[in-house]
Image (cartoon, rainbow, N blue to C red; front, side, top):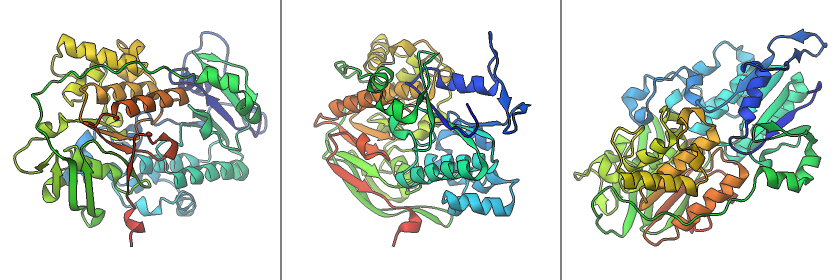
Amino acid sequence: MAEGESWAVIGPNGAGKTLFTNLLQGSVALKEGSVRHFDRTGKEIAGGIRTLVFKDIYSMTGAQSMYYQQRWNSRDAEESPLASSLLDGFSLERLKEYTSLFGIDDLLGKRVISLSSGELRKFLITRALMYEPEVLILDNPFIGLDEKARAALDSMLSAMKMKTGMQTVLVLSQTRDLPQWVDKILPVIDRTVLPPEGREEFIQDKALIRCLFPDCPVQPLPPAVGNTAPLSDYDYAVVMNGVTVKYGGREILSGIDWTVRKGENWALLGENGSGKSTLLSLVCGDNPQAYANDITLFGRKRGTGESIWDIKRRIGYLSPDIHTYYLEDIPCLKVVSSGFFDSVGLSRECSETQYEAAMRWMEVFGAAHLADRPFVRISYGEQRLVLLARAFVKSPELMILDEPLHGLDAGKKRLAKKIIEEYCSSPDVTLIYVTHYSDEIPSCVTHTKRLTRPDCRK
């Protein structure tokens, strides 16, 4: 990488992109060869490279002990550090400059646990930029960010290149995230580095792009394998009347009215921090404030004797939070099988029929080769495929998918989208789908609910 150049390392899930960037940092033992770093004067140096990977996002905040539902329990959430603590050690001048550039000034007083995944990503990226490193490696930095935040990050990285000479190495899984200011592309596939190309040369190399991100055929979907008694009939999957959620003096949701009929397919949209995940936590039974609101699920009003598990058994759910907290070092087949019991980890033994169904869903999502591999040792995109199979494994009647294509490469995105469209074409299946990309919305979606951030409400 010559002085002044910015690069993108691009390839499919599991290709070896993160392994390659680990080599750049010297964190992997070499069998042969060497990696050398030089400063702008040509002097050989040690270090100078800063890396930001989002695979275990909360470990970077000093909050490794957090648990999945802690975000929705106000007393436990108070144990989480303040977001401003992530930016300690910088001058007030630099703090104001960078937080205003990324528009995160209003988040400084929030608890880390209360931040949406997109908001937390913005904080961590801002912190990495404030160090003004010579080289910054960013692993899929645009995923999880709304359109406004993606544009802001693009401008920030371009400005840093001009201001400090910082060189950036982006790790990407799709061509649409390639910024204009990237100079060179390094394709990686099957743990092999292909010859580098200039940005425009790569964009025009359609054969190479098809090789990196081929289309995957959709297999027939497996038949339903239930683990509960037959469920009662209903007309409405979700009914919310004037739903309001507050933490301390801060209002997250205000007067939300929403009716989702059985068989309808909805897109739930809104900027980072608009309350989408909080709204879904009320539906999935994870948020205790559901009992203080007028909410009816599957024709039954919340708080009339149903358990959380009565609700969860009818729902297939995937979200950035579930991915963040699913840190079990168990084979991927058991991760998928845990979807039968809505558990993190597999504490109950599955039947042979359930294991067979789990394996079939892994085959449908092109993840069968991961069945025996430990979940924590595969790539982020491969983990997302496994968690998608987990969401579908019990053939749920309500599918809630919060940024389900997060981290998937371009070819796997197309595959997953087709599977979702086919599964949700049934009149007995209801879909709630969250994304920040309009082209990721499945064709079966016919209704839209849009939330606004509290500071944007009139």
